[in-house]
Length: 558
Image 1 (cartoon, rainbow, N blue to C red):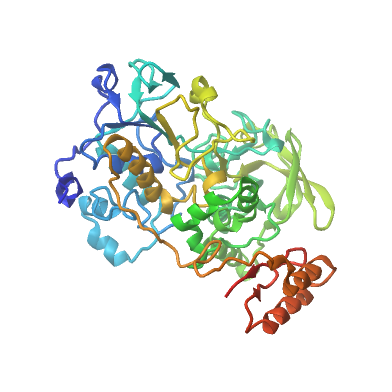
Image 2 (cartoon, rainbow, N blue to C red):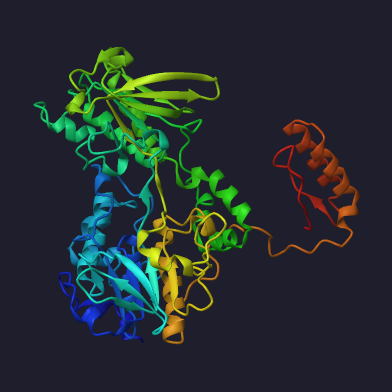
């Protein structure tokens, strides 16, 4: 048995994070694997790499310690993935870096067992990751990477950290995370003195409604604020709105508003078969599709990964319902299907209690002034303005090309939209004369689909990358990965047969083609397809149902 895979292998782990050592970079020794950034995904790779005795790896992070979304550590907020979606368990359940190992180290296994929790709080997940990061010997904090350069003479990447000799890497993995998306309308208002803040800073920014309220004499409540608007329909937006509702409680104010561009506040898809979109099987299928098809799919799959949980939406309804007990006023506006076209800061009037106009006052709340929103409701064609004191932008995150890659940007083969070309093993396409390898984590939504930012696939992706690295360095992979992970067949089923060469001339195909091109209601088209299926039930071709009048029917063999 490989001793590195023994559960007791962690017995001699250091209890605290090792400091960045001089010999990490100054000996001139080439590292097999260097990771840049230490969020959950690269931390997962660090935990797995630690279990490979002959692999020299180091992971570099600018922050002084592990930190994960500190601005959204809302009391009671829970993860949207089960606890098994930790750093390692879905690949190596015997690892000493699993969540259960963390509980054992903290003497909390029995309390967790009795709590019967499937989904952790965000706070506990962050503490688990901090526990691992503090003990993994290949993690280096206070190590900001300023640039990556190519050393053609030694065929390695030079990873530059101020004050040290460059780290030399045969394989480089970027896990630098994503950045908050600020809508163009708010670009000039998210600054040190502006009336808008991204939800990533909801609990930490000096401009957040909570920080401004704490600066008053009301003990940290929200009574000093008259009007707060949350923009964005995802989980972050729902959690911020719910937190504001709960903090306000039965107090008089502020008026709370939630604006979302989605036409309805539909919950995130959480059926068991729906969740199979977050499997390696679906990732492989998605990666095999043509680029235009992939781009179109991602934009249509928002409910798989961008929506709020049904539990959070229910809690919002309950909080508003409780406020109206005994004749109380809800004093909220929930406005779906609405887009903010423009935003203008400055002093002026803002919506007061119950949406009635009220003065912002001398310079507005906390001296930051108010904000006027120009909104559009496309379904009704209405355009109107709203006044508010503060806006929390729960407008998501996006991968950006990090500036540290600027010295090697000409070595990368970008796609037509300026994005990485990423192979199934998460390797970035480079020029043919570059022998070292570059990998990315959570920057491949356009090539690997909706599972890219999902923690449930983090361990598998890390194992895929590690297998590729170890095959190159050691001559063999180190993890056995399952061949099948979903009951759903994505694409052509295994039982399918090839169509005959003259299939296009088949009467059923011609009939369905005519039905798909002539005007018809959904029900009429479905009736046509179903009728053809019945007609050919004992023949060689079945006609699948039509998804929409403009969609041609698919012809498949039984």
